[in-house]
Image (cartoon, rainbow, N blue to C red; front, top):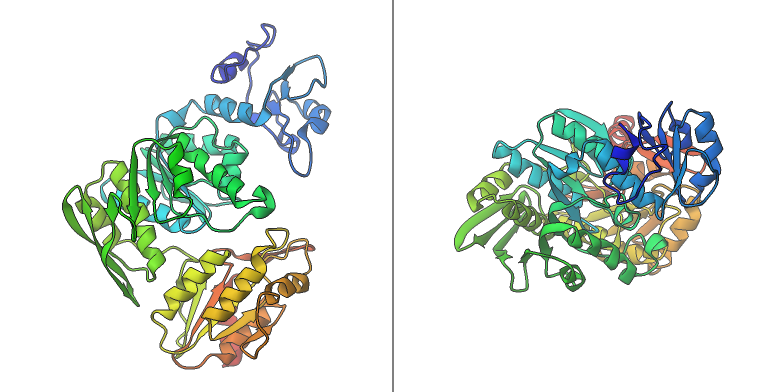
Length: 477
């Protein structure tokens, strides 16, 4: 593609000498530069792409774009490299983002489940739909592991093109606060933006809840329509820039309000009115937070033009998501559940959901990630201890921190007593939980969810809790 055509969607001009240069790819990582590519120098948190301009040219880059004047030949200075990368990538991949109906889901908890529910509603109606999120990326029948919740803009637009070329009409994607703040989704107009909730997380990046809320609110200035949970205290921030709003709730007056809620061991049920059309919504995922997830999915689908009947039929056959209240087959008299809960609110939700159907004790095993928001650690310790019968504090993804340091932060929020234990090694902690559990108990393995690895400062190891449970039970027997 000619450089002039790549710049066409950026509102920036390219020098006449370079406008006819043929570009074969766009790169922002100098290690991935190919011959005749365009290299975009971005200032990151750990390194500055401008330091690798010479390396990019040596690797075959034809033109370099950056924010600083570093060289004279084949270099173009722009005001904002991240925004340029987003718009240039959009042009390079044929502006397919404009041809798709993209649904963006924003919230601290519930994004992944909500995205799968919407996808299932659409597919039951015969619509082809791609999915981009924390668990995985789905392009037709092809599943790709996700490296991050929302990919960088260059990869994101490449995914859009693959989905569109494969016949997709819709894309449902989780939109992280990082991606909004770092302009990964800059220049995309979302068909629908959905807000589920905002609770403490990522304060290592956003510093304050106010900044976190403002970052999330950007999605609704980029959306044609918005579905917003007005029960959440930060909904007013989301509503400020939103257009064509559909509200949903359990408690407050709204367009779609759940009534006559039934919480059961095998799932939830409630009634909701779509423009006077009463429908019974049933979902085979337990817990009150599942009511909110179902409402978020119903509201998003409703904004897309799906009828109450379409939504009811789609949700009744919908199934859970890997790592979200996932029951591990064990053939034991107790139950083992894996859940991704890694925030205070997420942990509280899953324990309360389990408490609603557990016949015996609730045993919660969890840790906190390293090099992330450490303010939430004692809060999660307090929540786990107050809501569980027994707590096992262990490691999660300690990354560059010492696991024992993280565990001390967690325990700082707990009262002295005999209802918790600290076991650093997560495998040993799981084995202990399996030995400790009795008939009717429910063990919650919280924090890892769909992940099949652990990240330590020495490197990443394979760690799938489903396999660990199976191996521990085999050794026990």
